[in-house]
Image (cartoon, rainbow, N blue to C red; front, side, top):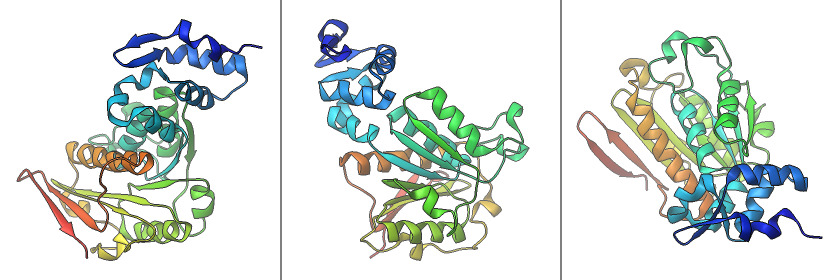
Length: 276
């Protein structure tokens, strides 16, 4: 018996070297075939047909890379200035499962920089709003909003089944816990931090030196307590975090392992700091 996927040659349009099918048709096919949306997209890609929403990514990561993203699970720890943007970008990239963690709610001070913060959702859970936003962007992605703080007691439930964690935290004490828990479980961490015009990003692989050991400062709040955070700094670091995340998950490009990339937007400088 023929399936919907057997008729892909009749449904697809050629765009350059790619055979493209509407993501809306793939969504309908998932329902008809009794598949999850992500399974349907993966089946299309395995047959060489690209759901239209990913066509602009093909020249960068290719079909195999997109399949890897759809098959991956990422924990985003913190859904504020960095995390809201990271969730948005990873949803658009097509990461199959996002675990979105934040125990806080939106308040008026978030409005200047947090992409998910609006006048109409003040007082609402950051993680729940993030999950809803991800679903609106890409209904294929399984978005799980966890309204809790990350610590030794919640780590198991949060990190279970995850291939990667993205550190979008604003304090070093929780960051160190995240690094420790991920290292124990063999999970890479992409870590970003911001304050004023400055930001930094690095990658900690489980078998390499723990990046958290090189971080210094107050254990409750980082440099942003003194310098504040303008709207543009989180956007730059979040984009760099997502680039590292996609490279880890797809196996493409070089990684910022055993080093920090330090950014000073006041002087328009980027500096690579070796940690070994």
